[in-house]
Length: 325
Image (tube, rainbow, N blue to C red; front, side):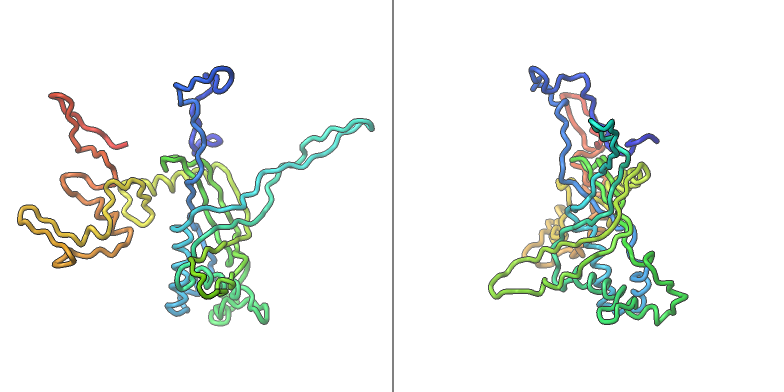
């Protein structure tokens, strides 16, 4: 495995003049520019004390934790704060002139900020409040894990920083959602703020609330991280994947939840409408939608592809099959 082998390979352009002299506008292959706007986040791990505390908390707290983790991944639209690789220099001088040369290459630890819409019930705000006041009580600054240490005992819980951090895999793809352009591992991440100002309202000013979730952490990148991101993307895009991790990008055969309410039987001339005698109502869950798309319907092998391997294509008197891309 060589450097960058798990990332998208640039198209060959060394045989083109590009914009030097006359530009060959008839050959667009040479202008294969990098497009932004296709980011993904995977929560690799979350604080271990929270995982253990869930067994002792009520359903309200468990729901907050589960919702928070699900929203982090599934409503992720991007982040800010990736630190650049920078340099420090040393000076070589003869007493008259000086030359600066690189003597250190580094990437500082920093903060990453992710933007989300808060949901009714404020799970994002409540989770941060729960997390922060669990690692340090507001009044005593004691590490309590909301009673977990007292319940199980210090020796059992072994409280410490290793129990209090998130790990995120962040990667961006090309515009086909098929190749990873860049991947970063954010480790040792801790949320910094419980934004209670969300409760500040003025009568008549009605809007959805957008919150900035900020984490301290360390950004890492290497070939192994690239490989994991590429493997994750292949799983997300695999047509055989029937789990919540499936990434559906083709809407032409997407079976929307409401379609399940319409019964159509052409042999018996059954057509229901206006909610009467409707078909089985779907749950709306992603897994159910994917399962329906995977089933054998209308003679097609299920999936999201517009062009299926069993769709005949006639050209004159000959027929052929078009394979999925």
